[in-house]
Amino acid sequence: MSVQTDTDLAYELLPGYGFFSRKGNFTKRIEIGQRLRKIQIYFDGVNPQQYAFPNVILIQPKGPKLRMMAVAESAVLSSDPNGQQDVDVRKALVNERNIKSGEETRPCLTIQLREAVDVEAIELGNRGVRLGKRMRNICVNGYRGGRLVSTHRGFDPADMVREMHKMHEAIGLSVPELRKKPARTAHRAAFVGRLLDQLESGEARGITPRQLAWLLPVFEPEVEKTPETAKLMTYIMAGAIEDQHPLPTANFGPM
Image 1 (cartoon, rainbow, N blue to C red):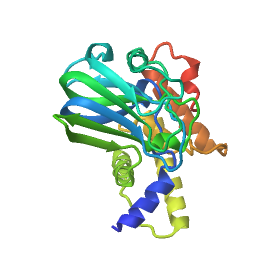
Image 2 (tube, rainbow, N blue to C red; image 1 turned 135 degrees about the horizontal axis):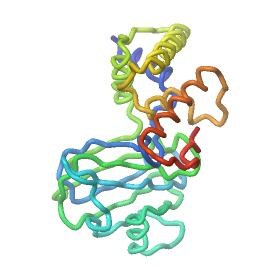
Image 3 (cartoon, helix red, strand yellow; image 1 turned 90 degrees about the vertical axis):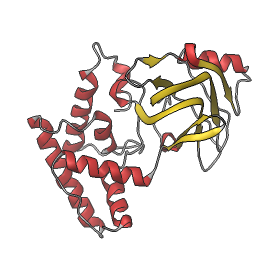
């Protein structure tokens, strides 16, 4: 299969790829599997913008989540619109409060840990007040001994293609090679129809609410209201409720 054809289909199928939200099963999980001493979170944008940095949770191998209060030695911004001291940035980090950058093309938050710790994964909770493609710009680097040992780019077309293949496999479909847009649009309709049928019957257990959100044009200012959109949003909200009792209505802001 042509890489370009595969990528074109992924763009058609997953217009919301890269979306993540603040809590529950809408957070972004980055697999690490390394000992880390320093973490850099940055936004790799095109034009200078102000960004809100996400909440950061470190997950140990076969263990509880690490509290930033216990492991973060310092937190430093590359730019800061409020003139905060570094100690205030760390305080905001450990208390999960908003940390905003100055207006930069590539703003960065550097978290220095007290010592190197085993990190299975990093969980990010988006704190942006508005949806937008800028959340796709997030990147995470992990360091140990002054060397880069882990790197993640928020919007990676190759990763989007891998996720598309995983979603097809989860509902028993193969990924076709489609060179023309009308054929890709028709396949998207067939894919979503089969997915909704399997969600209704309880078969599509491998699909997460965040993956369902990727099927929607969440980055667009206006979304066409269709029966398909309404059904997808219903299953997304049902998935959000599943692990949170009670569920604050604010969690449905992205919908």
